[in-house]
Structure formats: C-alpha cells, structure tokens
Image 1: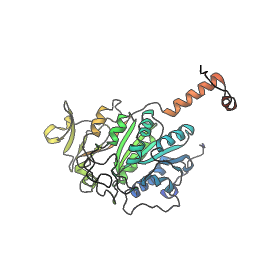
Image 2: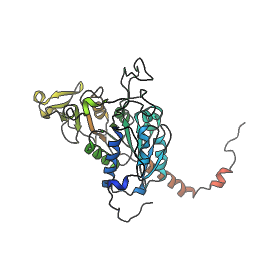
Image 3: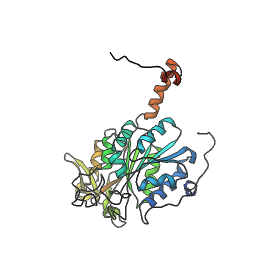
Image 4: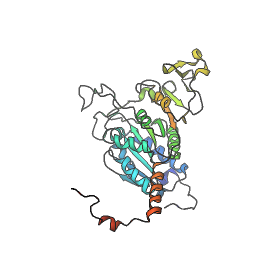
Length: 340
C-alpha cells in the first residue's frame, strides 16, 4: 500500500529481476526492456506499487524480467485484467505490455474499450508487424501482400494503423516511438506514465528472425532525419537533414512540403492538447507505411475524467445512501423477478 515516507532512489538494477532475459539475439525487445528499466527510476515510484500485465507473445515475457508485481495473463486479455486491477487498486501504477497480434487481433475489443473508458493504465504496444512467438504468421499490422506461413500467396488484409485505432477510440494519450532510439523511448514512457487516464505508446520493434528490417527504411541511423517526423507540442512540424521539410495543413488535408517553397509560417504547429482528435488522426495517416516520412512523438494528450475514479464515486454514493452491502444477504436473496 502507499505510504507517505519518501520514495527511495533506485537505479536500473533495482528494477531488474533475477530471471535470465531470453529473447532471440538481436531482438528489439531487449532495447525496450532496457529503456523502461532506465525510465522507472525517474518516475518516483516504489517497486511494490508497480504492476506489469501482459498477454501472450514474445513481448508478454516482460513481467518476468521486471522486479515488480506482474501477471502473464491470457491472449488479448491484458487490458481487461489491467482494468480490474487499476480499479480495485488505484494506488498501483499499472502497465500493460502487448504485441500487435495480442492487442489488435483477439484483444482488439479489450484494447479499444480500455482506451475509450480512460482507465488509468499505461499500454506499451510492441509492433513488429508479424506473429513472432508462433513463428512468423501475418498479424493485423502486416502490410498488404505480406508473404508468410499463413499467407503463402500474400496477405489481402488491409492492416491496422495502431495510432489511428487509438485515436478513433478517443484515447486521451497517444504516442509512437521506436526501438532504435533509447532516449526517445524513455521520454515517451515518462510522458505516458505521467498522464492520468489511459495512455498508449506504439513502439516499432524489430523482429530480426521473422520480419527483419520492417522499419529499417525509417529507423536506420542514416535515414532517421529524413524519414522520421518529430512531433513537439507548440512547434512547427519540421524534419529533414537540415529541417528543410515540413507538414502543411490546407483544404486538401495534410501534406509534406519544402519549407523554402511554402515558408515557415505555413507549417502546421503541433497541438497535442487539441480536444478534437481529427488533426492528430490526419497525422497518424501521413505515412501509408514505414517506408514514407512517419510522425513519432506524442499525437494527443488531453484531460478527461479517469474511469476508476468515476466508478468508485458511484460506489461511495451508493454506500452512503443504503449503507454497506451484505454479501450473505445478496447470495440468498432468491429470484429478483417472477416468470409467469
């Protein structure tokens, strides 16, 4: 339980469990794990007040490697289990770890409802555009034409855009980062945790065994400046090796332009606090895939009542009106209606 005593200082080592980390050599999950373990000491948390909940998949091993409370749950249900935990124990800091298949296929319904309800959880969505644990089948984020063991003639499914899905569900905090930039990951993790309500971060994560290089065109060190579009609140959206390109909003929507052609005053100034998610949604659709200039950073960060607080206020009001409930009486109360 929470205490008023000062939070002890910690280091990454304090957040590391005694379990051997076992992913394929070179997997992007190692980088994400290191980033969260480096971010947590700066969040001012006690290890006993933190819980990691995961579903099924390679990313779902995460709770074993964290020296916190944790639960390796069932396929797709991590947001639902985390919802119950966050509501029953509002003193806890609840993180959800899920992959693109786990979160957007069997778990898609749980994900969107946790987001729309604004449950106080932080969701880390590892997106490698493939099913890795089950050995290389296509996932809900795999591109059209993707040839895998389950799509030998190429996928004909149109993929989900996780950021678009989250914004469509009215998520109050939505961000994107990638496993090749530890500093940016740490910044996004801190921002997401500090947000009150549901926060979700899509993390481009390389599966070097079954989908190696899926994001290489935009995340490779020599490509980032030209291909990643950083979002900074209150600043014009610019990118490029010399910040020579930018994003413009006109009657046709968002488009990329050379700053020299349009002038800096024509560039869209990013407002992550805008209540209407339409522009954030357009930003999420700026790239058709991870081979075009792609926005990274915080798309949306707005305030809205947190779900658990609302539920607990209703429970408190009901108890004030009728007194504490009696479970024994409830279970033996008989039928509540008559069947004629």
